[in-house]
Image (cartoon, rainbow, N blue to C red; front, side):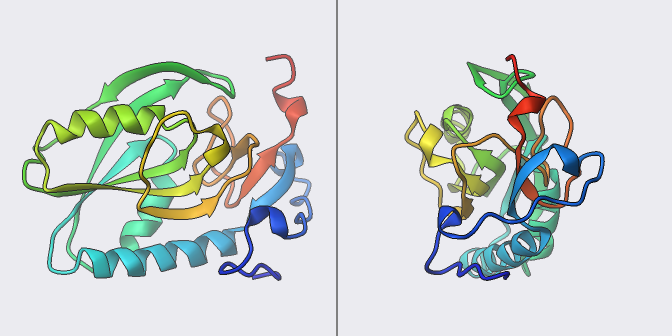
Length: 204
């Protein structure tokens, strides 16, 4: 994986990757953190672990919109078990790069979860505010279990105590986009995760 030893080294221990090709979107990326190949390998690894964990059960895999959409699509295809998929939308972000601190409940589940094993799938965990609010609300519905799977875990920004059972990568304290992650609605369609050039959001 381009010299990156997943088992022994974290994101900051490897040399910075070369900037992406000078495409319309790629020209705004300062540094590529996780390539499409990195992500694909990690999703397969998570899928194998989740398959074993939920073997013999039928979990409800809940994507937290909107940024989760490429991750959950790849993740459920890597899980070799029966499962169901649903979506929720809970937001604590505005149009910029900082959390507003206010959680808005935008879309609820389409089915009850009492007695169900629920797996919440997030693109990135930053402050933890959204997930803390969400898990507390869902626990009142008496599921059998709730676990969290996140592609990126930005622990430097954490303000809430949130237990993450399944994580892809530790994320640096930078504003990242790609593979579902956005800035003002853009960059979700990049196949990799990269650091957005600060000049793009200068003046916020």
